[in-house]
Image (cartoon, rainbow over all chains, first blue to last red):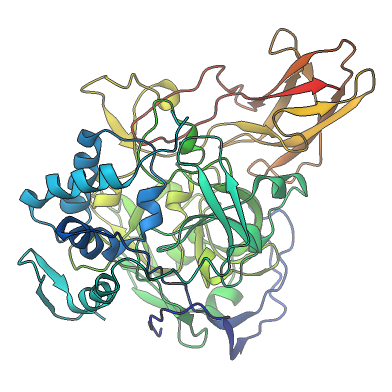
Length: 125
Length: 416
């Protein structure tokens, strides 16, 4: 497996190695019928890499370097309106559950920054 | 793959080097860098809940999808796709990854699936072996995210804010898990079988996604190691080259890019079984938002759902003529027995006609009609009952994960 990470979205490339298989048409009790022959071809794609970041001072930098380490900013922006307490719990879950490299005493600052940065449009619930 | 780490510039906890450098670039630019995606985003849509603005995008090997998260990808199927057929096309099938480091390349000549643990003969299977050994099967089954429809939770809960499109139905081709486990020989005392794929996190502390099934479930002859989806190989983002198929169970168990199967002598205590994807152990997996001390258990079997696919909410229809109503349904962990339709907000119900049966785990198409005789507003509702006589609830349940939503769906039409 090649695990190359590229950051520019381009078209994907189909590899050259093909695994053809023929003929295996056995039937088992769970089958809904004779299974169709499928051939597998090596694949290579290039995934997009979001470089959307928060603008601002030290809190933005912390959010950019920690929150956006593992996921893009759109995940944060698509959250429903959450209380500051819920943001703190979510960020603490990222820190203790998912290995976010954030110190415990940085949680509140990041939560406060994000809860202000992410606001529901008027008329939201 | 993992590289050394260095302290963050602010003296915080260490950060992996490559990621720090990557983010430093973004910070230097002061937040004005544009994403790689807007160039591809042709349309914007609004999901019917707060913060529901979404882009429609095209990822590699995928058609137009609703973007929920760019990295790691969360792509939702636009709902109109479900009106087009009983099977969801591969390029429109929803995509959900947990961890950001996803192989972008798979070589079918070198890929192996390792099966080991509490077994007699730990074995690495090549793809050629998996495609040719006895135990080949084909099965239609719905694959639905545990958190499908989370955006409709009330009160709202954090997470992936899906509409109703984190589901799909496909004809899966593969080899039964039982036949692979029989080949390696499960030893007495085995309790669970654990599955993992090739994706992993940015930090060594990020728990690798692993999910487990009871041995009896794994050996039931229905759980499948699939290499085919609707007659073709998987799109890479849907788990190429192998994906676990667990008919009737939520998608969290359908491990993508499946690379390792491990037979366990002890119950799996890993994060993804013990902490994540838990539901209240209550009827309908529902609880009061302020309830404390509720016993939580790993999510498991799906429950029935049904949808109208040919009419949108707030549609205008002609008075006095027959209006066709059609849609899809699934029974959850068993087949659809009945679809009831109401055009008067649930005051009266009529049975819809069921479409072709592709097996008890598949979507089932249904159709019916009604005539709006009087001018006004008609509240259309649809309720699936499965062959265990389980129907959809009239009011939505709630749980903190936003899982297992299956309330009776409804929409309003008005006469012209």
